Image (tube, rainbow, N blue to C red):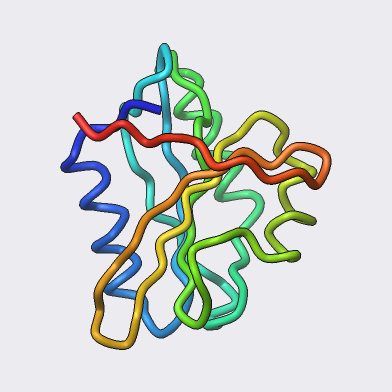
Length: 132
C-alpha cells in the first residue's frame, strides 16, 4: 500500500498517544493508495487487545465507500510484544479477507516500529508499506 508519510505519522502518533493500551483504527484507500487514516476508540482500553464499536465502524466504512474509497487496512498497536500478528489478530482477521494489517510496536521509551501484513487462512505474509 502506498501511504503518505504524514498519514503513517498519524498512525504512529495514535499508537504512542494511547500507550500503554493498544490503539486501533482503519486506513481508507483508493486505487491502492491510502487516502485517509481514521482513528477509532479501543473500547477494551487494554494493552493486550482492541475492540471497536461495531455500529460506529459500520458508519465509518459506509462514509468511506460513499466517498469512493474502501477499507485498505486495519491498524493497531502492540505495546507489550513485537509488531507481528498475534493469534488473536489471526483469528480476528478471518472476518476481513484481503485487508492489510498494520501493526505499530511501541516500546517503553515511546519508540515505534511499523510493519504491515496480509493474513489469509491463518497464513501471515509481510507486505511492504510504501511511504510517499
